Length: 118
View 1 (cartoon, helix red, strand yellow):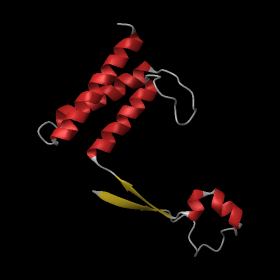
View 2 (cartoon, helix red, strand yellow; view 1 turned 90 degrees about the vertical axis):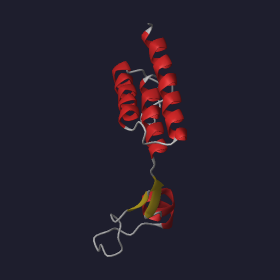
View 3 (cartoon, helix red, strand yellow; view 1 turned 30 degrees about the vertical axis):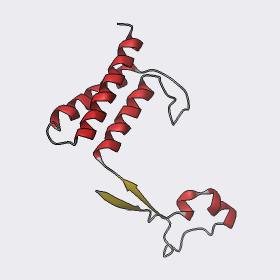
View 4 (cartoon, helix red, strand yellow; view 1 turned 60 degrees about the vertical axis):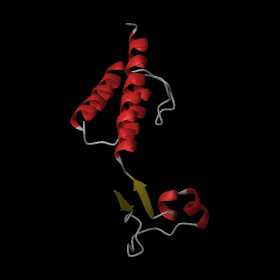
């Protein structure tokens, strides 16, 4: 399944839009690239949640702050969310997807226990 995201904020029909120089357009991807396509599937969704959990565990830096900070409550929430998705999608995923979520959950749970000091 895929869909297109079309940025209509900078349409040519908008007369109130200021004229941008060539240099400004090159440095601003939203101006030069009006259309992007994002692939969305179950595996990428799971990996996205897992990445958020790894940020919350302090294993990788936050893409926003570029700092590594642990927030175990957020990490626990993301791990529980993945567990819920595993339970609710049981018998409705491919073997590859099932293995992916199992491996991710194992890794995240071990990291959580390590950080929690249990």
